Length: 331
Ligand code: AMP
Ligand code: TRP
Image 1 (cartoon, rainbow, N blue to C red):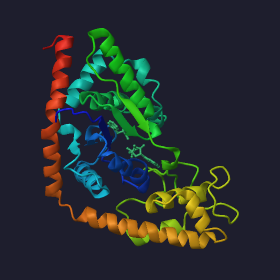
Image 2 (image 1 turned 135 degrees about the vertical axis):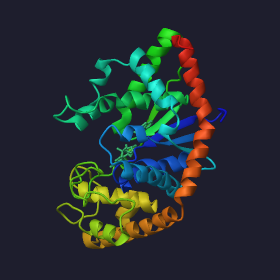
Image 3 (image 1 turned 90 degrees about the vertical axis):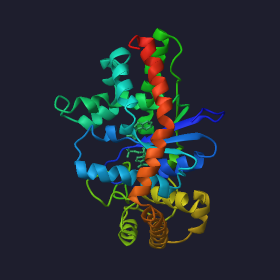
């Protein structure tokens, strides 16, 4: 894959937990729209997933599942590359080099995601969880990436990637391209259905928090009906006073591709019940359609698509790694 005049995008999702409509509306559906403007590489980041405990059989299934979700969402394997991180060994090799040469304890000590994920067990979590942002920097820098579209929770990691690249370049001369994060607009932060003040999350305690892309459509419709709403009866976007209704309006608007203002007008003088019933139908038919596409893709097909992806981009990664190895004196 020669770099043409299009800018290059790199992003990834971990094959762990259930992917939910927050991931879809906030991340993957945005990538779909970027495919014509950018040269895109979408990774299934399995070596990031093993920074926390995984069951081997489930992990193997989840890797295939994420790739299928990319394709069912509209990522076109003819246009964009889909691949599995662990199939290109340059990722871990380069991460080791970055660890030794430019990454410092003081950088990683600042990472808020590590603090959140390790909680009160910082002494006992694996080293991989601590070092996770350096592997992410390796993913991004190997492909001379211009733009990294991620949620705001990943901004700190992309900033660290820039710092590491800058340090390397200062010491060894211009070698690595500095990427930019592209953070989605605020509308795309989907909140939990059972608690609209917190982000929808696959690690939430209750499964009423999220709608998984693999949820039974009828069950998903029921989750919308049970979603927490606010006092009052007006269907109006107001994050402070009406976080529940605002979140449902956001989901509705993104799924039917209508402005929130338009929906507010449609539901003027109508009750929460009717609004939720209609949204439940919208979610249900979205899932039926999505799952039809998802089920039409075989495991074999996905394996082939990912193998082709690897073949296509491995030379880019190997080339960057060779240049780096030469600069540091091991080649
Ligand atoms: P994760 O599941 O944390 O690996 O996230 C995968 C992608 O989905 C990242 O770009 C996240 O920022 C994005 N994401 C996760 N949860 C949400 C949410 N509730 N709303 C919007 N985007 C999300
Ligand atoms: N850390 C990201 C997340 O949890 C996933 C990820 C790994 C990633 N490598 C990446 C995202 C490179 C963008 C670019 O969501």
